[in-house]
Length: 290
Image (cartoon, rainbow, N blue to C red; front, side, top):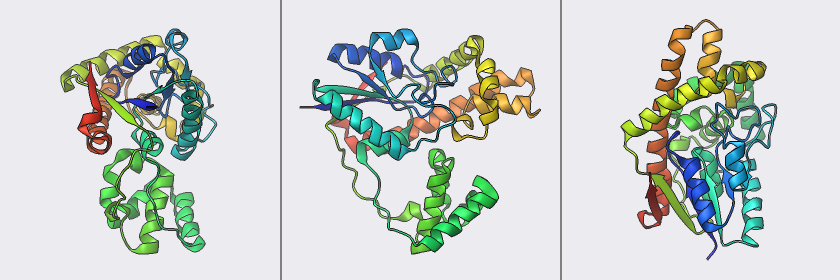
């Protein structure tokens, strides 16, 4: 049976190394599902597979975009699906590896069926964003759908926030309270999840932060700072460097700030994957690694 092997977990938990090992064992290729590894300008801060690692196993959707490009979960799902179908022509297995839950969810389960809205409501919600940015959307959602904002990956995605407002204004029902369809995987799935303790992951995060800075994270940020407004750069590692340059952090506070933000992000990832993905595919389809 054709099988999609999905290697997921918190940042710094060893996903890349395990995905390469698994792909070698299965004689197949790896597709990245990390929303920052798509951008060729961000290899250090995104912990993208190195050129050596990519030479060991063929990787797809790593560094195929510029930070100037926009790329949605829907586009990713479409691109990844096409790659999977092509690989399945000659292989029985494909490895998907990454930590971007919304992108993985879009590929594996498709999108929730959300009712259409009128052009007037769509224009109204878009105007709110254009005039007040993400903060304006959050201000309204805090009143009408606070549960929606509990998922940071959703909260930081302007299009998803706009969609949540569209649904509320159209149906009078918070997006978070809409009855969700039963998730059904579009592939035969086996998930692989790290068995590391939280302390072990945190130690890896602390060490990797130092390694990223040694490898040139500040130089990488310097090269893309004109695009600091983009969603990809409003993320852990990059936003702390930009905050330092804006005078919001001192140089001595930078390392601890990145480590702390990354640990918090890893905790949110762990909660999301366990509650959303692993439960959906079923414990019988989950394997653990360290």
